[in-house]
Image (cartoon, rainbow, N blue to C red; front, side, top):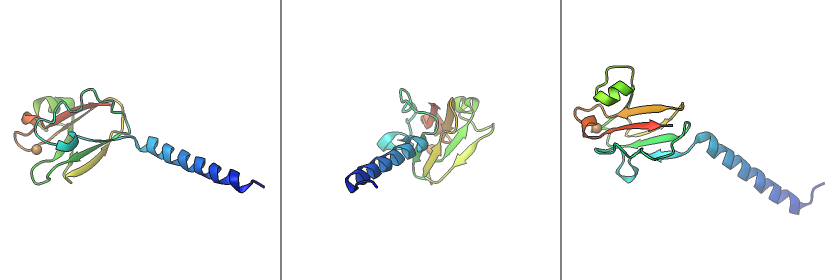
Length: 123
Ligand SMILES: [Cu+2]
């Protein structure tokens, strides 16, 4: 039988292992635009960041003023939603990047994408 002095540290190590594993599975959370949130001129926030697949992008904004639309590269470039897209409107959207490669987001309210509410994330 294990002595109590051995069991307690063993449990702590196990607990730490579980915590660390959980963190890896969920990936890192990124608040888009940092403390400015999802806002005009946010474009470029993503450059130089080591964002990986399984990481979570958090878009914070006033839902009566903005939205988040995941679009294809062509729509990202033209600031128009014409192809397949997915729209988020909660104002606090947590979007997990499912795959490696580029993912594109714009705000589809008139003129907002043109004012820099667009990001192209490379995971
Ligand atoms: Cu907007």
